[in-house]
Image 1 (tube, rainbow over the protein chains, first blue to last red):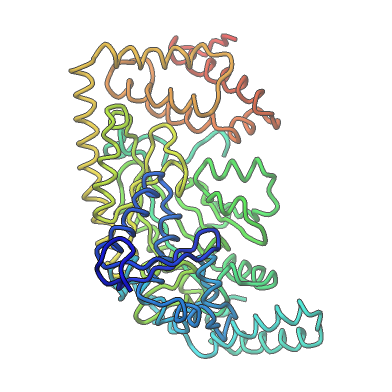
Image 2: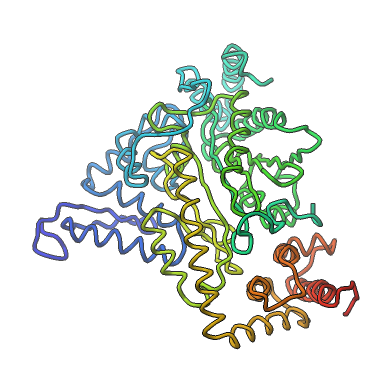
Length: 178
Length: 354
C-alpha cells in the first residue's frame, strides 16, 4: 500500500476516531510524523492540553496496527473490573489497577509515547505495597456486587457483601482503618 | 473563609511580583477498589469512609474542614473552585465525594475525584521544596493507614495513564502581563512544550488565561524522580521571570507613555465603573498589578490586588453579598465592591463613595 501523501510505502496505519467515527489513514513514516505533530500543535495552540493527550492516546495506540488487530485488542476485557480496552479508548480512563496488567501490551506503547519512559523512578510506598491477589479479588467481588444490584439479585448481592467484609477484616488487620 | 484568603495568596515569598504560588499535587488510588469512574455507589461510599479516616489524622481535627461536596450549594462549590481548593470536575461531577481543607488553606485533599485521592499543597511565591516536604509528609501519613495501588515497574497507578508513575503534578502560577502585551507569550509556550512542560490558564486544563495568569507544570510523570520533576520546573521559572522582566523593561523604556496610560486607564475604570464583568475586571486588575510592580501606581499594595482578583469572582462576590445574584446584578455589585475598595486605598481611608 502506498502512502496517501507520496509514493513511499505506507508503514503507518492510523485510525483516527473523530466523534466516534473511525477514519483510516495510511502514511509513510515521514508523513505520519508530520500528521501527528500537526494535529497536536493545532490543539496545543487552542490551549486544550487534555484534548491533545486524549487525541495522542487514540493515535499512538493505533499507529502500526491494522484495523483488524485494533478491533481485536479493543474487544479485550479486564476480568477484574469488566471494562474493555475500547471503553478505555473512548473514555480515556481505566477501570481498575489491574488494567495495567491486563492491557499491558496496548498500554506500554501508549505510556512510552506519553512519558518517553516505561519505568517508575522515585517514591515507593514504605509498606512496599504490591498488588496482592486478595486486593484484586476484592475489586472483582465489588464489581460482581454492583452487577447483582443492577440485576436486582439482592440475595447474591448480600452474599457478596459478606464475602467482601470477611476478606476486608482478615486482610492485613493493621491496615484496616475501622 | 470568605473574608480571609489562604496563605498562598498573601503575595509574599520569593519573586512574588511575578510568581503567585507554588503547588504540588499527588494522585493516589486504593489497591482494593476499582477506579472512581468504574466504582459503584456503594464503592464510592466505602472509599470515602476509608479515606476520610486516613485523612482526618493528618492534622488536629479542629483545624481541618471536611466537606461532602454533594451536600454543597452550587455557589459554594464554585467558591471552592475559585479558591483552587477543588477542581471544576470535582465541583461538577456526581456521586459521593469530599474535600478536606486545612485551616490555613495550605493543603486540600479531594476524595473520589478522577482518582480516589488527589492531595494538593500550595504555598505563596516560588517555594517548591517546602511544598514537596509538606505533601510528602501528608502522603506518608495517609499511606500508613491504607494500601495504595502500586506497580513494581509503573509506580503509583492512576485512572489516566498520563499521571502514572509519580502521580505528581508540580505547578507554579505566574503573572505574565508584559509577555502577553509584547506578544511573546506564544513563543515562550512553544519552547516550554518542547521540554515537556505544560502551560495552563488560571483554573487548570482548558481554562482561559484570565488576568494573564499562567500555570507552568510538568507534563511527564513517569521515569523521572519527584526531585527531578521539581527541579525542572524550579529551573525554568527564573528563566520565564527573566523574560517577563525584560519585556517590562522594554515597555517602560520604549513606550513609557503608552504603558503608563494603559495602567492609569485600567485603574480609572476599576475605580469608576458602575457595572463590570468578571473578565473585564481580571483584565484590568492585571494591568494595575503590573503598574504597581513597576511603580506607576503608588497607592496600592500587591496583597490588596491579589485579594481583589479573588473577591470579584462570581461565587466570592455572592458569598460576600450574602445573596445569590443574577449576572447583571453581580456586575453592578462587583463595580460597587471595586469602587469601595480602590477608593478606600487611594485616599487612605474607608470612605464609602457610591
